[in-house]
Length: 335
Image 1 (cartoon, rainbow, N blue to C red):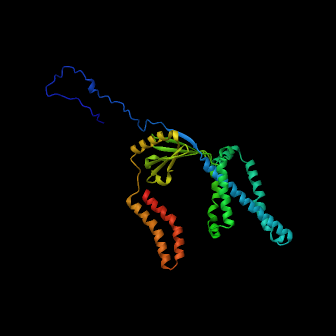
Image 2: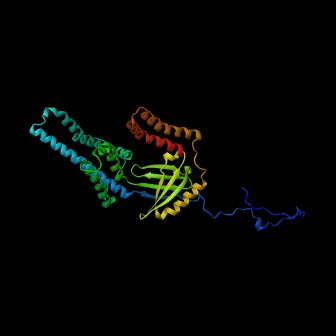
Image 3: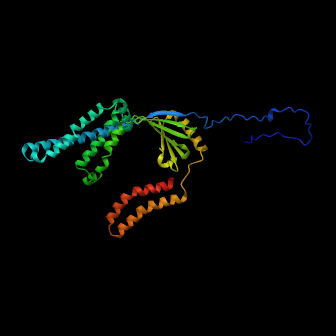
């Protein structure tokens, strides 16, 4: 690589037999670059990122929802027992219900106890790593946000069973959508946080999830833009990463960073993006095909329903196909 320096010569002749005294200005040794390079930057580590407010809110929602379900089951059991006592329901017609409740209730606890007793400590540790090692230590939660979550769950339950400006059919229609929350909310509440490591030399972000003891790596070489958002009054800074190519749907597009490291992380990310050649994107033909698939799945179904005179069916079909259409269109724009 040329250094930008060269030795000047005059027009006269020189005697090759005479030694030449090298000038200090003609020293070909390169000078050290004062600007820090990406390879010279050490990895930056922080964590765990635990989101205590969100976890506390999820805990309040989960405990209140579980309490509501348990109270409902108790009321049903009491009403069922009262019906048996007054003769409204004969015992001979309910034996199957008793068997199902026995096997699915107390007997299932015995199964778990026997399995736990027959499992080695190594196997238990392996199972915990697969299902997750969750922590519900009360010291990790904030009481105010926990009560706020409980209040939200109680308000929703009261609105669904009591007088409300929203029709009850709306609540009954969206009720199945809340069933996955019964699993997701406790999982979120018991999460043990994430350790993050930014490696500028490798152009990568490594996230180690403590709950499952697994590490996931995102390639910063596929990022084309970053945006910094200071989250006041919290002591946290959010960086949004815009990915392209296959990394768009495989990478986590955000970084939560303590304020004390925000400037250092921003400088490292800027250097990585400046050095990167960018992601390998899909061809124009592939993106056009994805866009056509996304548009046709939405428009053709609606057109067929309207042509058949079923406008309500067209609306329902649009609601069902809209997420898939949006996914295909997003892939066409981002890949």
